[in-house]
Length: 387
Image 1 (tube, rainbow, N blue to C red):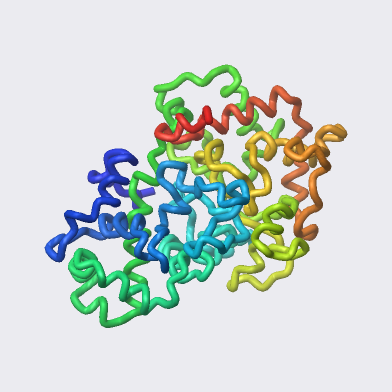
Image 2 (cartoon, one colour):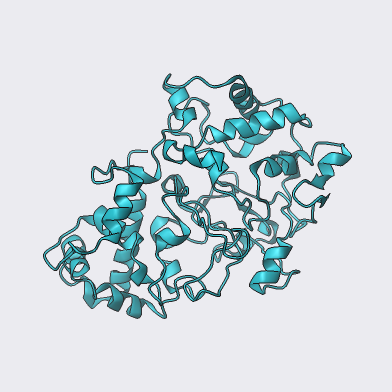
C-alpha cells in the first residue's frame, strides 16, 4: 500500500510510550506535524471524562494494539473511563487496520471493509472519532466539550492551526474531525504495520520455518485440506509481502453468546448482537449475525477471540471451526468449558458453504495451524508467545 508511512520519530514501542507520556516539553511553541499530533492524541488520557483513558488503553502498542486488561471479564470486553461500564464486544486490534478498504458493497453483492466489527465507520478517521464521546468508553459529553479539552493544551492549539488552518477551532465539527484525522494519520505509520514477523522474515529468506510451522503454512494456504484461506487470504499469491490475512468480508460463523460476559456487563443473555445489520448503512436481514473477518496478524497474542471474546485460546478457535467438518463426538465439546459448544447467537445466515469446505482435522494438523499462526506475530510481540 502506497499510503503506509515510515515514521522516523518512532524507534521502539518503549521510546514511543516515554515520549507520549512525558508532556513537560510541550509548550505553545511546540509545533507537531499531523502524524506527531496524532501520536500525542492517541496516548492522551485527557480525551476521556475522568482523564484516565486514551486510545492506547484499549489498543495498547505493547500488546498487539488490543486491550490487555482483564476488566473482570477475562479480557472479553473493555472497561469504560467511569470504571464501571463494560462493552459487549471485544476490542479489535488497531494493528494493520489501515489496510481495510472503506466500507462498500462489492460487485459480488458482498459488504466489505470499514472499521469496527460491523463496519459502521468507513475508515480510520471515523473509527478514531467514536470512543471519546461514547458514554461507555471515554465518556466525554459532546464534541464541543472534547474540543474545549483539546484547547487546554497549548501545543495542540499551535499544531492544529499549523496543520488544519488558523481558524480550525472556530468550527466544532471541523476541529473534532481534525482530531480524528490526525489520530488516523498516526495509525497509518509503520508502528502499526511493521511486517516483520517470522512469516515475513521467512518470505525474505531471513528465517527458516520449523517442520510444524511449515506444515501449518501448507495446510493454511491449501485449497484441499483446510478452509482457512477462503476468508483469511487477501492476495492471490501466498508470498505477497503485505498479506493481511483477511479478505475484509463479513460472515456469520455461528459464534455462541458470551454468557459469562453478559451476566457481568448487564446485557440480557438472550440479546442478539446482529453484527453487520447494526450498521446504519445496512438494512438487509440476510446480513444479521455477520461480522468482519479479522486479520490474523498477531492473532496468537491478541486473545480472547471472536467479536464477543467468548474463546480464550487460539487452539479453541481452530477446534470450533473443525466442529463443522468433524463427526467426532470430541469435536462437539468446547475444551475450555467441557460442555458442548453453545448455540449460535444468531442462528440464521451462517456461512455453511465456507465453514463446511475441507475435511476434518487431526490433532497434528490443528497444532500445526496454531504453530503457523504464531509465526504471524510481529517481532516486538514474540516475547508474549510464551506467556
